[in-house]
Structures are given as structure tokens and as C-alpha cells.
Image (tube, rainbow, N blue to C red; front, top):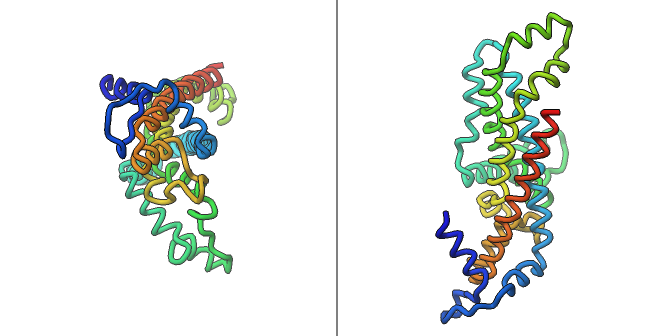
Amino acid sequence: MIVPLSMTVYYSFVEYNLLYPGPKLFIGLENYSYFSTDSAFFPALFNTLVLVGSVLTITVVLGLALALLVNQPFFGRGVVRVLLISPFFIMPTVNALIWKNMMMDPNYGIFSVIADFFNVVPINFLEDLPLASIILMVSWQWTPFALLIFMTSLQSQDTEQKEAAQLDGAGFWSIFRFLTLPHLARPIAIVVMIQTIFHLSLFAEIFVTTGGGPGFASTNLAWLIYRQAFLAFDVGVASAGGVFAIILANIVAFFLIRAVGKNLTE
């Protein structure tokens, strides 16, 4: 980790374009200035924060709800658990291809078939709702991760406290608010931290489906860095973007974990 990070910081302060080989000249903060004044920078920053926030909200809420459901005894619970967790083991590129071709295609996708059944004009999701489509893809794949963490944590919850609360007349919501949520505070913080790190660098789904478009509608920081490095061949500017992304990831993760931990333990 130290070697590539050090190289990234070094390249961010030098002029390094693959199309113009030669000595790497120290140019100070020019790469940072160029990256931050790019017309796609603020749309990419906004899309990154919206994507991370939306996916975190969906996966934590839905994962917690599913964990509470499958934690109850019922016939076939083991099979249901395996089926619910299975999307997490699909590769991101395969996940994107499944949603792009099987679900969201405006001509023969499942959503199009459903729209035709109800005599509604099919939506071209990847053109009309590109960012929402990416959020849906990522949420579908990462909800099982949250489910797995919460389900494991619920199995370690003290049942005697719940039984005592039920004997005292506490309902489901009271038990959930004062016993279950505080018990899940640390697992929720872990889910938030890990997903924040991964989603801030989300790339495969955008690469396979929208290519950052239309325009900058689905461009995030990771795609903008890729565009600078491998389409514009400007390693210096891309490295400046990488340093910025690292700083942003640490700031977002720090405040999210503090907020989640504080709200759940109060």
C-alpha cells in the first residue's frame, strides 16, 4: 500500500503525460488545480456522494429488515438465507451485464416486458435514469453483505433480555428501538465503513453500462480519474484526483461512522 500511495502522491506534483515522454518536471499544485477546475469535477463529486449515500441507505435499511425477517424460525429458512446472500458473490461486471441486458434493456428486458403488460411506455433506464440505475445495481449486490453481517449479529443477541421485555409488555418497536438497534450499532458502523470505502471507488458498473453518461449524469470520481489516466493519458492529473479521492474517502467514512455510532447508542 505504501509504495503505490507514495508514487501517486509523487506523480500528482509532476508533469507526467504518457503521450509526451521526457523528464518529469515538478509543477507543484497545477495538477490539483486542473483536476478541480475540470467541467466534470463538481458533477462527479455530487454523483459520488449521492451514489454512496443512496446505496448506504438502501442496503442498511433493507438488509436490516431482511435480517429481522430471516432471523425468525420458519420452514426453508436455510434455503432462503442462501438465496438472499447469493447476489453478493456475483462479480460486479457480471452484475452490471445482468441488469443492463436482462432487466433494463428497453426492447426485451424484464422491466420492458412488465411495462408492455400494463400498457405503459418502457423506460430506457440507462439513458433516462443513469445514476438511479447504477444505484439499483449496486444496492442489489451489496444488500446481501449488510444482511449477512446483521443476521450474524442478531444470532448473538441475548434472548433473555428480549423475553424479559416481552413479559413487561414491550412491543416489537420498543424491543427494536431499545435492544436490537443498540446491539447492532457496531455491525452497522462496520457495514457503513466498508461500503463507503468500496462505493467511493465504484467503477465496474459505470464502465460496463453508462460510460459516465449521458454527459456527466453518471460520472463519479473514480470514472473521472480513469478518464484522465487512460483516455487523456495524463497520469499527473489522474494522480491528483486519486489523492483527492483518498482524502474524501477518509473524511466521509469518519463522519458517517461517528454519526451512525452516536445515533444508535444514544
